[in-house]
Length: 304
Image (tube, rainbow, N blue to C red; front, side):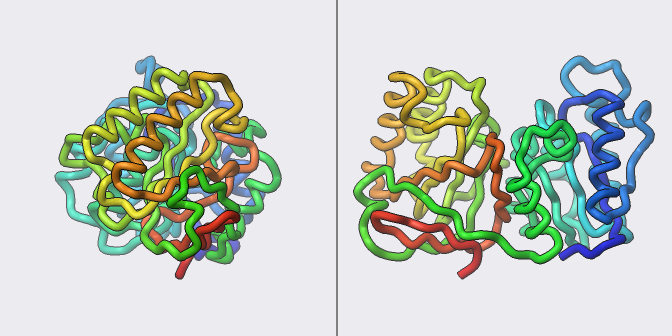
């Protein structure tokens, strides 16, 4: 996919960050053997917005410029946080890019990534944002995973845990994988940008700051909205940098809410510890066909 010396556009579609972190992100790109197409810090982060890195207009124009840049081979989000969904209406008003390149993002960037996959069939890699690499929030294992994805277009098999009887039944499940951060996935439900879940394998994860009550509410909302009914499987990634079932009693209750909707629709439900907000985050290519070998020891394989 990428080779040494390739140009990568660095964008900030969500929250801001310090200049020191930005400089560390530039160093990460250099250490990867890549070249950054990056704005000056004081232009990228205007300091006038409390929640986001810059105005909606600036962030959209920067993203559009990166999408159109014929010299770059990838677009890498610097940080998540808040604000990516604000760009969706403007994205919906422009044509899909003629050429495609990898779009790398995470967490709040979920809103953009699912738009790209659903509307444009555009390649996206759910992987650490540059800020996570710069601040040491992910392990060497996570770094090696994104390097393997970027430079070799290869992905490791991912061990899963079956969470319901349907997942324990011996067999194979195939479909395109989509999803991302649970709270961001929910924001588009009922809108024109809602994810097309038909025949899809849905990955859902979130950060440790989401409470059991909020997660339970989201699971129930998605279930009542029929979000899961046309999917072929659901995978829960990391939520708490801990075992989902062990955090506290409330999380068990949230999980039971989700299992209810999986049971109603006879959909296999799995757990993957190393996808999402966690140190050992494994990179996953959204919009790509994957295969799940089901049973007592299920495995997710990227590709068919």
